Image 1 (cartoon, rainbow, N blue to C red):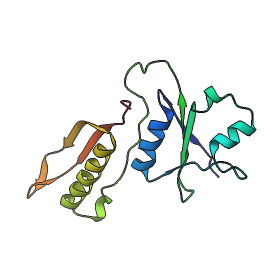
Image 2 (cartoon, rainbow, N blue to C red):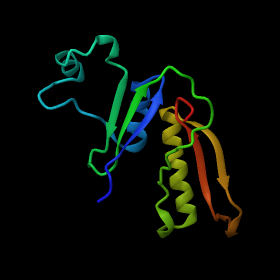
Image 3 (cartoon, one colour):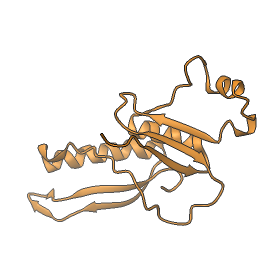
Image 4 (cartoon, rainbow, N blue to C red):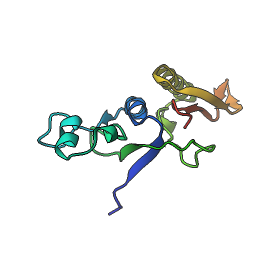
Length: 146
């Protein structure tokens, strides 16, 4: 059995990135612990200082299959390109035609741009035949440039 993992993003705004990625991945913001109506109620009961209440936010797969993703407040600036990134596989894979795959990718790119992503690069490899791409993907940045 594999080790259960959590993915952690250092961020300047945990809530903003949690909201973006929850929508991007079709996840949800993690519910408060059992017995608490809100996270604020839990944090208050645990005597966490109020100035620390917004230092983290987490999202989870509603079906419980994907990893938990935690966003933690870091005030140090991001020095450059991330060495880790998430690939969102939305094309439908090789079971669908290249034209359909490209259309599905473009539809998801449009949705993510509306959520606040920024388009950085489009890779559209030379066609095999009839104008269908051999490889097609789009590099997007989240609202903090990840």
